[in-house]
Amino acid sequence: MTRYQTIATLFAVATAAVAFQTSPGLAFSSEAQQMCSGDAMRLCSSEIPDIPRVRACMVQKKAQVSPGCRAVMDREHAAAGASRKREATAQ
Image (tube, rainbow, N blue to C red; front, top):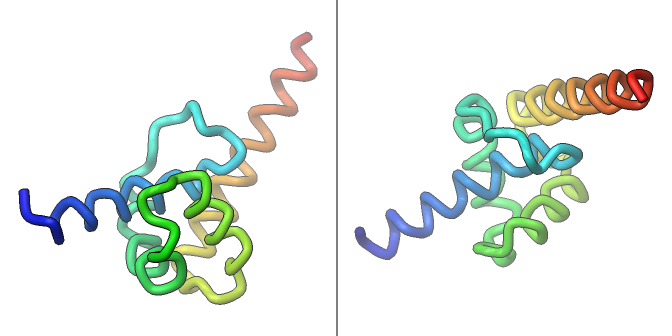
């Protein structure tokens, strides 16, 4: 694997983690990888490969991400919040 491929893979994993910022145990969505990889490279490349730092950077710069990435982040964040609410109610 070339250095570029390794870096690209790390970006994809890191940007997917952003979509699940409140539920890190969930599997990463391919939609999040597709929609946010470019934004992570553009906005948070200095944080690679530290996924928690990339996640924090993307959240901090959410106003600068592309509309598609923002929509995925919002949708995944809302889904994670609903899941936590169901878990709290079940207890």
